[in-house]
Image (cartoon, rainbow, N blue to C red; front, side, top):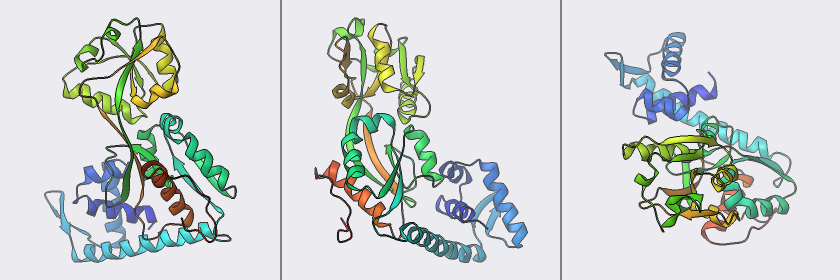
Length: 310
């Protein structure tokens, strides 16, 4: 049995035996998860789950024992991998960090430059994808740390989350747009308007669609992109309207584009999230602590050294 299969089993148990919830958290299909359970029980001639009318209702005594042992194996595996990554030198190694392009530009330019400059022996791999895509990568263990948007819909049993920045989404449009005449707009003002928004790989895309559904509005999405500066650019000479995080205002210099706050805006909460572990490598702990202290406590970034556990 592979480690990933143990994690499938644990996820099923920790999602109250709900295969739909577990499959969403694991980012695999429910049929594939069901097939894995049946195949394992048949191959091992072992019944892990109690069933009623085809639904999982509880763990058998063997299942209870298997769950306890699986938790021990996962912990030992995590410790082994951490020690392997740190082998050779305490301040050498690598860490994979996922940050959405917009958040990287707006919030992380200075801190990541400092962290990389101050630690030349550490390989910091920055993966730029939309928050929605990074969430999938985190679940598949392709990232050690990710910066996402709240809500992440990740299990608090498997992942830790820390809010590092709070703001709101706001509209940007040409100053010639009729809606730009006031000081604020309503969501209903966007009905029938040409919207230019992030594509499906970005969490903001899904937040906007959820907002429109809650208002029973059918948005006219005329353009989608993964580039925030392109979304702003297209509003300059058209009636397109885009909705982006308010801090964007400090990173563009178009005199012909106006920011319009939205009444009852969508909250934009940026969270740092990483897997729950019994032990973190020094590089992981250093990176997590540095990000937390920079955003929450306003501290400068310091280098990781042999005599500094940060």
